[in-house]
Figure 1 (cartoon, rainbow, N blue to C red):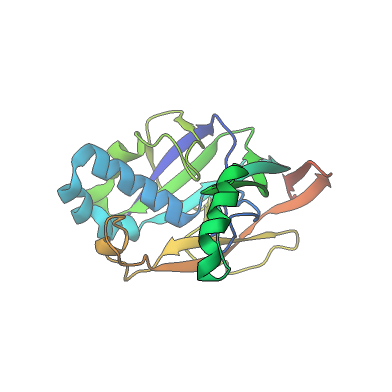
Figure 2: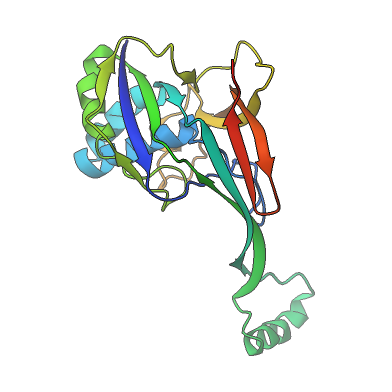
Length: 240
C-alpha cells in the first residue's frame, strides 16, 4: 500500500453535522469524516472520468485508509439561524383544506420560517490528509485529489495547496479509518461515519433506492476546550 499526502486550506467555514443530528439542531464535526472524504473522491471520479471508471474504482475508494493532521487551534461559532421547514398537517383529513388555506394566507405554505442551531468551524491553518491506497491506484487517486474543492456541507470550500505527494508512512497522522487503540488524557471524542466494507456502488448511487451502509468510528482528537462563550468555542491541541 502506498500513502499519498494532500494539503488543503479551508477558504470558508466548515460544517458537517453527524448523521444522527436533527435538521433543527446538532453540533458540527470538527473535521471531515472518512465517509465524506471517500464520497468526495467518488464525486470527482464520476464527474471527470464518467460512471464506468467511477463504479469500477468504488471498491478501492471505499477501502481507502485515511489519516489527518489538524491545526493547533480550531474555533467553532455557535449561532441560531433562520431556516425554512416544510409545514406539516397532523389534523383530521376534513380539516386539511382549511388548514392549507390559512397557511397560504399567513405566508407559511408549503414552508414555514423557523430557527435552528448551527455550528461553523474555522480552521486557521491547512488540513493535511494522508490516503493509504493500493500501489497500482496511486496515480489515479493523485489525479482525483487534485480536483477536490469542497468537503463537508456544500459550500465548505477548500484550496489544494500543492500537488499531492507520496510519503513513506502515516505515523504522524491521526488515523480516521480505525478505532483508537488508546484514549489520551486530554482527548476529544468525535463520532465519524465511514463506509461499511460490504457497501456496494448501488448503495452510494443517489439514483438508486438502496440505502447506504455506514459504520461509526469513535476517533480521539488531541484537543481540549480552551475557551468558550455564548457565541464561540475555542479548541486547542493538548500538549503531549
